[in-house]
Length: 116
Length: 111
Image 1 (spheres, one colour):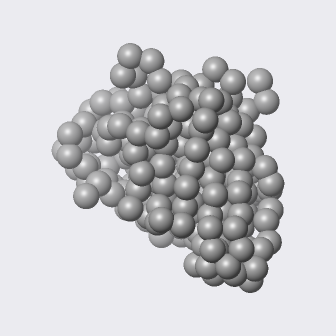
Image 2 (cartoon, rainbow over the protein chains, first blue to last red):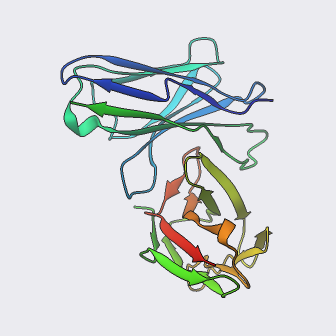
């Protein structure tokens, strides 16, 4: 197993442009999470999926942000009309949840977004 | 709401020194607690976890005990190495799926 994979690793964009990031979880994992991390801070939760269902969204996830996991495997996070404040590291994690047990989240290396 | 507070860094120690990184939390119910580590240029990795009061998590010489009475989960290691230099994050799982992280503590170990 290659772990959680995120693409691209780095993205530079101009303010106002749309960007899309992809996350491929560990293959048997049914949960997928998105977090945002700014410099010097811990990751902040954005949203998560169980299979293809989006179960929770943070109030941090404004209308410009949308996430999908259409077939319960990979996920995409799109940011529309980017702003400079969107510059951050976007982290994806996955876990295998069974019977209510709190299983471990495995993180990808992240996508670093810079909005100019 | 639920939150995690860590001691501020950076923490600089000499090799073989004793390490403590303080972590306290605020949560309703009975969260699980975690320490994650982020080595330079790498993603977050789980270091250890504890799922109920008085549990002790341990890994790679690091330990942390879930203290419900003091709402704490301090990370300790008896003898740090240069290779332990990293950023350490305390986190809680309040229920549902998400993790709530502290702000991170940077550790630098000098030879």
